[in-house]
Length: 232
Image 1 (cartoon, helix red, strand yellow):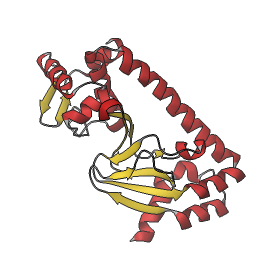
Image 2 (cartoon, rainbow, N blue to C red; image 1 turned 30 degrees about the horizontal axis):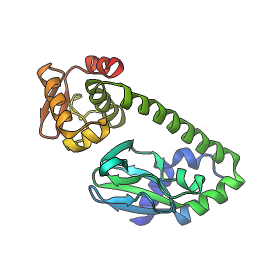
Image 3 (cartoon, rainbow, N blue to C red; image 1 turned 60 degrees about the horizontal axis):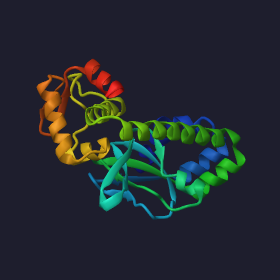
């Protein structure tokens, strides 16, 4: 069972990195790859800890959070299969500046960062892979910072919903978001208070942009929601 799982991870989920490794490098990864299962809201790593692993999300959903002023938590990034995370701090030679938690029951792969460093030292293509990933994430972070600080509440909530849609998609009905979030999480993603998130969500429902049933959110008018997100 374990061998079959590892083979699937290597051949399918990690194909992007796998293709740029030599046979010896692939063997080293296969021998050191660990599979971890996390329960809903379980901590993967905490702000202030020293980075040890390159993490890859295989199944489920992960959120990266950072504690701000007064202990308020901000969701700074959403991770979807198959994305790599948890390595920036290692490259910067510093502790983690954010935490990572499972949004739901999730399966992750972990590769020791000491091995990743050795592989990068001998494989320029792998080095460029991580340069591209870091550059892409930095550009996205810059854009999100501006949006969270300059957009009005409507625009921020609309953007958060579009981010959820673009990351996780719809259920089979093509309108229900494939993630069920607590109002507090939605507020933390939108940089607003929970009460404001609830109030704005209700406004979107009244405007027939959404249907809300508990934590299930159906997007009725995606085009208008994207417009509010862009110009809000």
